[in-house]
Image 1 (cartoon, helix red, strand yellow):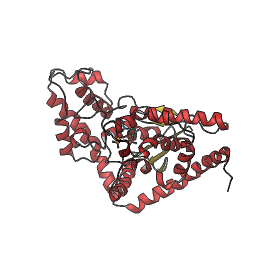
Image 2 (tube, protein in one colour):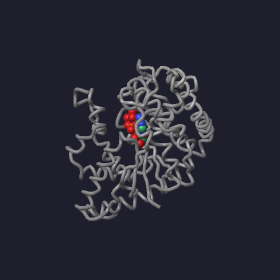
Image 3 (tube, protein in one colour):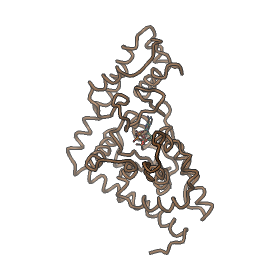
Image 4 (cartoon, rainbow, N blue to C red):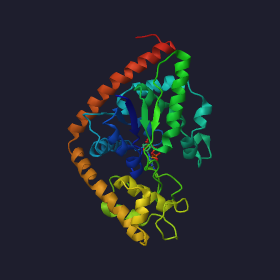
Length: 330
Ligand code: AQP
């Protein structure tokens, strides 16, 4: 079986973007691949986190993975910081990465665009893609399923792997990207030119996986559309197009089918169909999350077993890296 690695960072409560762009797709892939899925807490701390919140959220995300259909018997589920090889490999790779290539990463540019002063930008944010490279390469992943926003980081991981291989001899598998079709990029409900992000300040801009039905309905009814008033799938109507994408990803429709379904109908009716599709999708997930969180020892067993299995694979690769670089074996 080919292998995949992916993760979500617990930097906020998970959104519909994380669900459709990542987690839902991961559940499908587990049948075909050997999967390593992580909660990448070391990535979350590239920006300030409230410690108690971070701890709580990390476990909630593990519960969300399982409630969304990811089977801990089939996949290795683990918390990134439980496998120290990630931090160690990250340093070894940092020393094989240039400032130039990191400066070109659009996520870094986006996240720092509004910050005028270099003193206010954490260096972790700059080095983030190197840690992500370590995550991927340690497991010799053949592929990495991510939303389009993360594609550039996976390409960088591939470049770094290639460079390491040619400097020190063949060490890493070169990872490919797997991007889901309809849900590659879910946009912000208030500004459909931006992607939906869990760390956005305005809660109306995103739907959370754990949002209550009435909150989901309210947020969708407030989603920005346009004054054209016709449900169409075009660049001129990015808000409507985003809602069509969401409906398609949830219900398996094609965009044209949705356009046909809502011909002659208003936005209110269309939005209410989107909201109900979301409520139908998330209600059972939320119930399962609550059940899992009430049995903490079960979750603990899952992440401990996961860390053990992940460590075994990660250590193998780390030892190879250390040896090739010239570090004396213990
Ligand atoms: N809007 C999105 N549409 C599709 N996929 C998305 N992903 C994130 N947002 C969307 C995918 O979710 C996975 C986990 O992402 P992450 O948590 O590691 O980081 P991110 O991409 O930076 O996600 P956020 O929600 O935007 O977090 P913040 O706001 O903290 O930076 C990835 O596969 C990503 O593609």
